[in-house]
Image (cartoon, rainbow, N blue to C red):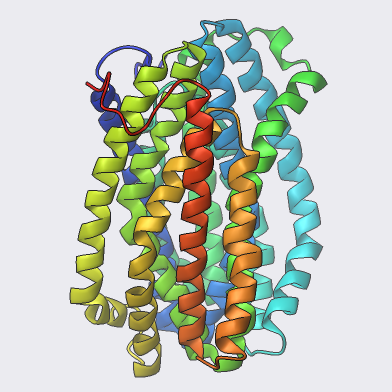
Amino acid sequence: MSGQERDLTEGAVLGHVRAVALPAALSLLFVTLYNVTDTFYAGMISTTAQAGLGLGAQVFFLVIAIGIGFRIGMSAFVGDAIGGGDGDGAARAAVQGILAAAVLTLVTMVGGFWGLPALIRAIGGEQDYVNEAVTFAQLMLLAAPGFVLSNAFAGILTAQGNNVTQERAQGGAMLANIGLNPLFIWGAPGLWPGFGLNGIALATIAAQSGMLLFVAWRAMRSDVMQGTSWRDFVPDMARMFELLKQVGPAAGTVSVSVLAGVICQFFLRDFGEQVVAAYGVGLRLQQLLLLPVIGLTTALLPLTAQNRGADQPNRIRQAIQQVAAIAFGFVGLSIILIWLAAEPIARLFNDEDAVVSNVVAYLRVLSGALPFFAVVFIAQNVLQGFKRPLVPLFIGLWRQGLALLLLIWLFTGPLDMGPTGVWLALLVAAGSGAILSLIFLIRTVRRSDITLWTRKGVA
């Protein structure tokens, strides 16, 4: 037993939000700093390497999305059983999820070896950085177990209100990555030569494998897994199917962000590698600014799942209202930071004026989308806690798929706005997604007698 599990159905809601959200936010901070480190070192190699990393990593995110889908799906599935007092059901769901994740990891590694290069070449065309992106993505497949299985184990812990383990694991991986990157990029004298951009992939393989071992060890010592027996490890196709009904749409929702990246990369490639590199840098800086909001809103998933299982709608309302108030405070601070310090921050990653100017333009336009992202994240986590993962998927397909495609075509084609048209399309698409998210959130919670606007019952 780890001693870090929490009963989210009793006690102060704000206390639970803080206890669950802070480790989640720190975990995401470490993930983003991990990615920022990769971007920084790639920029030290060359702008071409930085563009190749941006494209290769974005496509490889399809693999990471499967792992995140398992974490979200298992958190909702196991958390609901915990809230309903079904310890045996929670244990069986956890074990079947691990088995399913192991099988899917193998399938992904085999299929990705041929599939990822084809997708990269379709997006990048004949650009110089495409070959580097292909090799990078194929090598990264060796890190797939670290991404998929570690997230499956993390989902078991999240369902129990334990995000501390994931936070520590990501922090350790980030520190390892900082040290391993230069070692693999430029080599160790007398031991091995430098591997350039591929060294970043090798560093990730080592760091993520270590993280998997740590998270798995902590999950197996948790309350849920302590209740397992050998019978739980016998494949149960019916239970796996029920779990995958949560995992699939959740992974799809995360994967849609790759679709947005594919669309943006496709239209940006005609503007040159400086613009492509700027998009990669700007996107990661935006993610860094959104970390407090993302981490905060992730607390809504286990809180909703456990309290839904325990039939306590008032606690779900309290959680939504309190998280929303804090999230919009962070959004305001992020917008101020963008307008005051976008340029000096951008120059930390690339000192080419063309790259920096595009990063600044991206961040300033997308600062207007930060409130929309907050609404989307709140709705997404609550809906997944209510076991309605298809709704965020459909909204994502609109926001980061069809709407974005049409808007980029309009702004860069008939309106001829250049790269700025891509940034504006992202802004408008985010706004439409926020409106849809709010509509579905209100409809879903009302079915559980939750009225978001009232202060009745709020602690």
